[in-house]
Length: 454
Image (cartoon, rainbow, N blue to C red; front, side, top):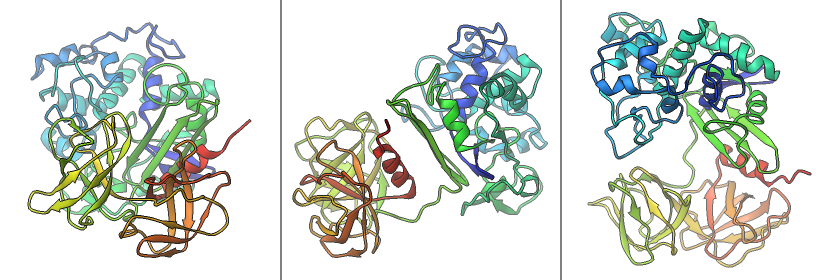
């Protein structure tokens, strides 16, 4: 998805929030705010589209509500319990080649997927699926007789006074002066010219998507202001009305975005015109152990894709299934098996899932005051390895375990020097608190969440 900031458009990727409500607007008793047509959320989608005789008989049982809830049986790869199917929304060139022509409609994608097998029985589990939302867009068009975007504007956006939402052209030639230049380093084959062997920029179709076809799942543009307006009355994640405390992130070639509904009634969003960031906190890796591995207080081994360049011993920040990032200490690295050995974690740290993110972390020594006057932040031995020579840190404070932004201008072997808290009231860092290199996205999150509004 794309976002407009003032006169500038940049890509984002939280479009499913719009599609959820747009689909709900075609149904009664669905949790949507606009009941335009009496359409049952239990309606089976492929029969509505006129399809029959699927490759997988279960396809004909998929309902509108199951797609809204990511329970349609399609797995983009986010649920490790099932085989990861390719994401058709980013493979429109491959689908076009299979069909013998450039993909011209959502029904082309649906027709191709109707000939594929599901990854799990619909309604029995959940797995994130971009295609599920493209399929919902096809249902909206079939039921209303309008294009997805035209119906979105008429039934959902205009009644709410939200104007800055539009389809983002795939080709550079179709983009206008008020649209920012989307930036991404990747290249890929062209979905709009099946005979071409050239590699084109991901932001102009090289990612495999035709935005005009994928507007329900990724190809629509909206300003950060429009997103904030929208989530003030609609759930930023899932179905129904405003969801206090909920948030979602998104990323696609040429975009990184965040939208959040705070508990105090404030809704905010931002979007940046790239998702490519320079390396930050030394090395990162992904866990490879299948299933949910417990993080224990007794020694255990954590296997990842690659341990190269991690320190021989130290600390890791490990994403868990339900408890967020957890600090894990390790005493050794086995390069032959790509494993961290002698690992220990705090009590009740939770479990790490297959593919969870692991990154080098450092721990703060002592309860250092985080002030706006210069101070030195001491860390564990060689704990600054992999950090930028000068930059910004996210440091967990002892008051509420929130991350606070600390700017530093010099880097020592075991300390960040000439530090200063960017915002007042940062309190102090606990001994053992994690300090990580802050990215633009994490910096914005921390700053906006630190502002107390009346």
